[in-house]
Image 1 (tube, rainbow, N blue to C red):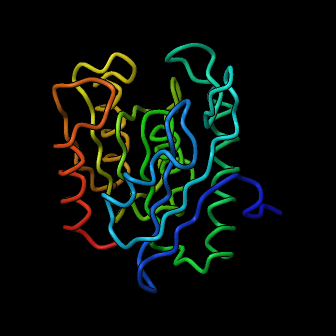
Image 2 (image 1 turned 90 degrees about the horizontal axis):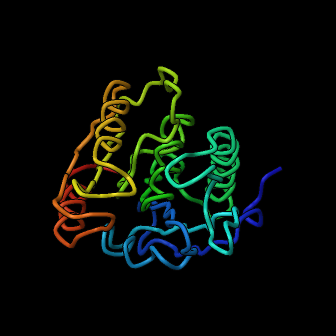
Image 3 (image 1 turned 60 degrees about the vertical axis):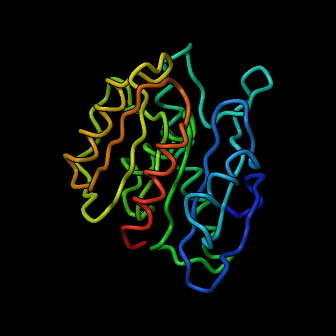
Length: 210
């Protein structure tokens, strides 16, 4: 049975009971501390759950294996997403979190993983704020799951050489076709989170209910 011990992680309780939880998923080479400032900026007062990816790529933490730059090991992604979903469910029990108010936020590899959670485990998350994310199930059409009521923010760089804007647009289409309410914000930069995009994500968070 999966427990909170299955992932190295940081948990910061909410400022007040009943607040939503932000599941923070770091990018390649980062760790469980990297996105804590992002979580605090995106959702002040929310609980923060920030695990560390288990895959070691030449000393860099990742969430799933890749065959080479830009080419995912999709079978590994599917297995790792299931493992992460079980951890999130266990953490909700252990930390007395509302399982219906968990919102993921991730960057790059972490954002791709959060996108996989939406498409493969549609009942796990109430929404997601994803930065530099692309369609994760490369070469496979996601199942026709129901994401009605799920709010998603996507920040993508039009000159991103790692996660191309076409991949971000494909992800937006896949989520929208399954009923998600997608807010896509493209910026002229590359593989990063510009301040104006974070500000847009903060407004997106404030405008909805989680």
